Length: 100
Image (cartoon, rainbow, N blue to C red; front, top):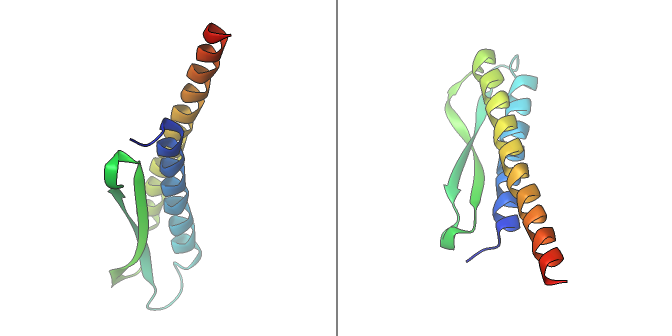
């Protein structure tokens, strides 16, 4: 079983990868024949969080409204994963206070 902080950390890394890919898509939206980047997330083996991988879309072009939604969604995913890490730290601090 993976630690809670590593699960939260992997979620933050996957969300950052989504933000990076979306930002790259927006930066290249006027590039001729540009195929946008898409991030695929999968559960890591053994319940150890998530993994993300970037692939190219089959279609050319970038939809700016889709990228805006993707960036908002990735930001919320990052914040949720950060909250997991913060809660784990608070729980560990409380446990140490009880044991000490």
